[in-house]
Length: 392
Ligand SMILES: Cc1cc2nc3c(=O)[nH]c(=O)nc-3n(C[C@H](O)[C@H](O)[C@H](O)COP(=O)(O)OP(=O)(O)OC[C@H]3O[C@@H](n4cnc5c(N)ncnc54)[C@H](O)[C@@H]3O)c2cc1C
Image (tube, rainbow, N blue to C red; front, top):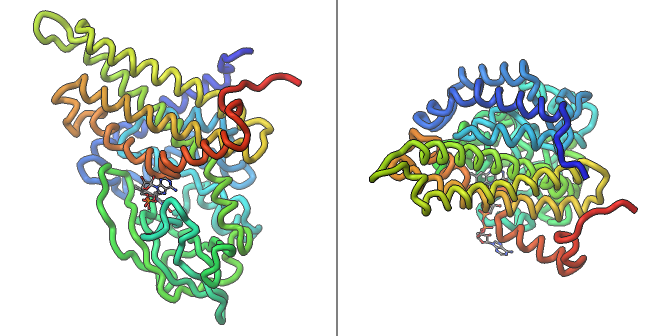
């Protein structure tokens, strides 16, 4: 076994770190103080994303992306995850299911989105459909001119700056016909109902959308009628690995800041790292990161290869669960080590502490991940998680 990163992967990791430090870090306080990124700053970052070649790392070059493997995407996301205020979301990763689009949809939506010229947002969740999206009440009913969509969507991330939405509906209210439509935001009948505030200060907003008799052509269906859930499930693999990678990066930044602080902060007759309680916190943070990073790299490397779709899903749940819970343990200790400074918004540790809380909630809560893993253990046995792949 050889766990070393290749020279190319090491260079990619370094480049992503430089990009994060040089392009994203300078905007952190703007997002914090204004609770969002200004259009000018967003435009500048978009230009830099293209220049550095980090646009649509999750889509093929043929579709306008940069075509990195899942392992390479994780190396990049880990670095981006060090930025606060979710400025990593200004480095767009167009929704994975768009790659299933028709030739026309790929030209109209995917390619310009991969080139930072347009922006998508994915709308599944509703007031009564969260962990269980089969309870979706948004309907699409056949009418003259295509389909008429009615309903309401919650927490639509980047909804404020998106040009179009991917809207998860049930045709005729039938959960077996879960279907996703491309909907331009300026289509008559589409409106923002409310833009709630959240714990984090995020580069963009998560508005709630209303769809009132929104007529959309049949050609705007993505992949086909009834394909909504399967597409989302496949996407979960990529999305959950992305979250896990960002959690590892965020935790690394917190540990670095806490370690530096503890080495310099004198209280009583010594630097605080010489109090064993503080040193042990640093140890626990380090061990947590070491374990999470080992798991992340291993799983991303495995998934980048040829692996059964259900196994990928099972693995991605485990890693999302582990890394999102890990970063919350680490950031909490980071705040404690910094003392009062750890509670000040001007410090990255405090911002990461707020930022990372949502990672245990979105893209499937920790409880849902445990349900998935529990189900897999019951069906396939514990070796799925505790075993090791071997040559046949
Ligand atoms: C900041 C933010 C951004 C988001 N962005 C988007 C987005 O862009 N697009 C989108 O569609 N959605 C988005 N979401 C929605 C997110 O995916 C949901 O919040 C999440 O899936 C949980 O759903 P819920 O909030 O309705 O909680 P609920 O499903 O109501 O869950 C409440 C509690 O019950 C638990 N629970 C529920 N069902 C079970 C079960 N079967 N077994 C055990 N426990 C259970 C949950 O784990 C949780 O603890 C976003 C959410 C947030 C907070």
